Length: 176
Image (cartoon, rainbow, N blue to C red; front, side):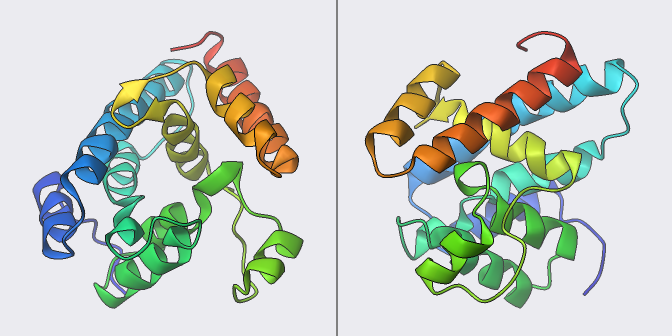
């Protein structure tokens, strides 16, 4: 697999080729905008961030929604990205963006293969963070996302989302 990242236009073309719904593409563009703002804020604080990777990963994070709107869109999206020959760094963002990450035990219950489904790199964390702050294509307070997860039987996910949000905002020093 090459480590060459697709351009923004190539990433958008990939979403269209896989017949991602228009609203998913709009959501992905909104997530990308916030993710890049976050990456820039972190860079200003002296952190090393691959902005191109953040942009492509954010654009493609929901490519799996071309096939399913369940939590499985993360692994389906990773499979699509691998089949398209995308770099492992992009595949990992797609695979690890849901719910602030999926634990080993949750992945097992979902029937997913053994792997890491929790964001590890700063780029993975930025995309997951931005995704949790965008509902459809509008920015929402993190409390809304956490509250929605808390109502479902996903209290652990709600806590992971809160921790991820706190980690990124602490690095930035403020809410971007």
